[in-house]
Image 1 (cartoon, rainbow, N blue to C red):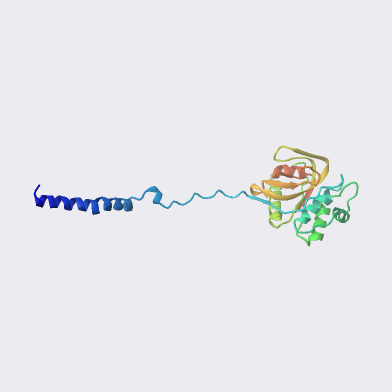
Image 2 (cartoon, rainbow, N blue to C red):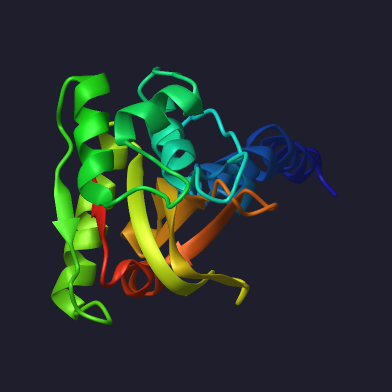
Length: 215
């Protein structure tokens, strides 16, 4: 190879090493970035469960006729009031025969907290769809305002696990929370050994039927 040709070959090789190959790789990286260099937005987080349960002080009823005082007291503790069950029973007019009606629990709840509670009656044997809708709306409104609800029930209520809660002579419970848009409600039962369970809005409505609730 003559000197001119040799110099030309060296110059071309130098360009390939110094600029062509390396610059080409750099240009390719800029023109078509690999997946690892892309900024990818993280997937959206799943929505939080629609659930709200109020802080409250649970006490079990000490006898078979103190369910209303115990349930009313549980509801009062959601607003920072913690009278004794005996004191609540006196205000309710509770006797060994029980407590007359949910009108009494509404009255005492308003007396102690300063107001905000109303009585809703369900006179039918089973709750109508519109009555279940109202129950759901009332529980959501009350819980969002940090007010526990008191429900006067009769018969057998069935929770979301299928467990029955039979009270053929009537019973009072507190409702202290909801989830799934109010389709399920958290019951604080002053009699039940398990203390708390979830119940669907229609099952609770049927359990309240023929009685009523304070919300």
